[in-house]
Length: 218
Length: 146
Image 1 (cartoon, rainbow over the protein chains, first blue to last red):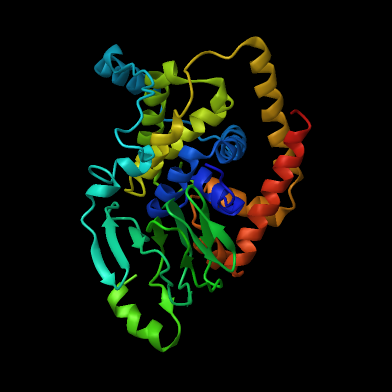
Image 2: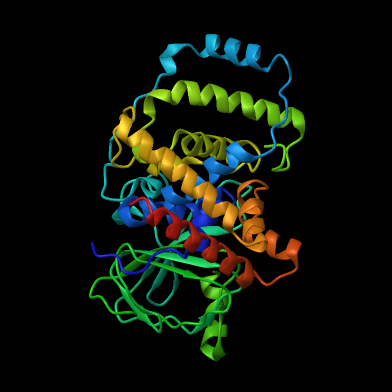
């Protein structure tokens, strides 16, 4: 898989810092699972965390802290000594996504939201602000030109689409902010399935778009 | 931890958790993850997301061990990691104050890009470009070692 489009480095910084919303974290993590280059970028950025950890003003812990930690250790014992499991998910989906999709992409109960467009919402924690969903768009299908009410990050899982920003195939990420307007067209012979995290309802432009909007509900 | 919005008691509980988790997962450390300090940071980050933000840190954990085999760092790797740590510290110290500020707000105060933009009264795009510039600086410094 040749990945041509990666997350914005500002997104990776926020991901590494742990201040990114869960829906976006899932999309970025799914990309990271198949992109060694971005995993290396991430490790560089996580070093910032290590460096800051060592430089932040220290606050004296309560005197009993060490004692409590040690007794905590006694309770948990050695049995929790975990070993890394190199286990890959049953299906070919990357682990951060496989966890949210029972079965594979073929087993999803899609909800048709417009001709040629189906959606499946994925669960997030209650505190998550952005929503997470899978979109399945039929070959040749054009999505009405739309701007974004907020940040939207899309990861292509199967198939491909093309818009003003280029061609997006499996593993590619479109990391777009509110100012970007685009009109993706699916150019693969199979449907294009994408993992999408979005902060605000996507605003479609134009008459057809406005008709489309209440149907899609994204 | 205290800086990221939890009270001192909550922060101390979190520190307890971090210490316990580091102890339990010590056998999972791999030098490919970066320095020990960076690894401890990721553990603290994941616990903070879970406890303070009430969101799942599972996605982070799902990719943490991709292609990594747990082992101790060799002497050579240790020297390499120490040098990297120093270079990242240097890069951070060299950042212009406005870039350093967004990095600290993000890493230490656990603020989203939108929250930082609001707090600093600048457009979201400005927060992003400061982060990008900080990343470029980091890369430039790290190229000295690779």
